[in-house]
Length: 259
Image: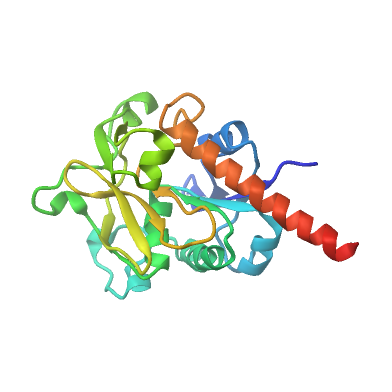
């Protein structure tokens, strides 16, 4: 039996400001392969090339990654401003309906950073374009200088709801995480449950209420050092277990129909 397939939502980039490419961070693929125990497959973020229905059939689960482009504010009914930054409308067109379809089908996904925000927007929520400009909020953005180790270093605590899914999974009511984001959740979407907060009350962990599949998503970047970090490893392990269970159930049903 081959490993279950996790589709990793990529981002559109221009290499050397000229060559268009679909890209995904190596650490995302490493976390999926080495910790989740699944086969990572990079998905082009372009609706001209891929369709949601076929992605749902080819992949068993999805990792909605981080990325420099932000979800376009038109997706949650607000006008574009300079504070909203760069966009990837192709990714919006793939990821947002994909999230809604996965929720309906019980197909596992995990959102990370931009992916966390995509889950909220897909379910009808809104975003702050620049949370560091809000009164009493921290600067959650990636440090502009330093090594990758310094940029992905643990920088603040996240507290979870007592007895909530993150508390139960991680065995702690409070953990340390990195932080590399500029936008944040403003209004939670329908069925979105905020289950973790930074010290300044910025939402950091969520899930979809009553969804039949895995929907745990985080604002930080657990793919960094995922094999060894005590917070990242159980997250990716639990995601992998959910993907494997979904794949087993789907293939078992297919065998039954062909018998």
